[in-house]
Amino acid sequence: MRRLALAVSLVLPTLLVAAPTKSLTLEDRIAARRAIEEVYWRHRIWPADNPAPKPSLDQVLPESAIRARVEDDLRKSEALTSLWSVRVGTAELQAEMRRMASQTRNGAMLSELFEALDDDPYLIAECLARPLLVDRLARERFDGAGFDAWWGGESAKHPVVLPTPIGEVEPVTPNATSCTDDTWSTLKSSIPDPSTSRYQKRSSSSHWALTCPL
View (cartoon, rainbow, N blue to C red):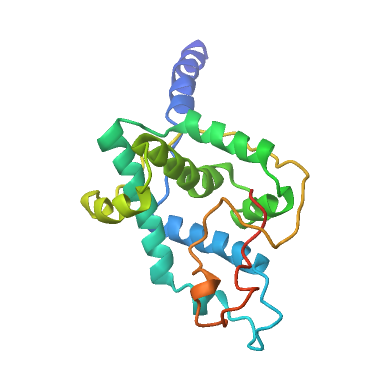
């Protein structure tokens, strides 16, 4: 009995340390991004002066566009590491999630985004917080105007690399704030700009957008 107890005491800490690490494939990230875009699209206000019915998300944002956006986010993450030696890990993503939750100006929509990701802190960290954080850090390190033009020529130099799996992240709860659906969002959607969309004519109402800044 003593030998068994000793064996258990030695093995149990090993089992606790060797808990499987969670990870996401590229396809997992694409599926999560589509779920996010579904929320964005529900909050798009279809202009009253456009007689055509609001199209489905698939009509305005094909799977290839979502894949391209996810791959671009991953290229940008790799660029942060290779160009500026900046690594985004568990602590950075946890901090970004807390910032989003505490500083949001649209808690209702942020809650919808969390729900679209099954309220899974890991999915939220990797598929919602990481793209935001990576984009902001890259722009800060570039430290100048013209980032988008520069990145347009730079992105292809960086491979699509899946990030190293992060550790456990704690769930966060968005502030209970709300606003109208007629202002811009800082969370960038891949949905085409309506002012250039073939689904709506140009007019003074062509600048409708997603939601208020999250």
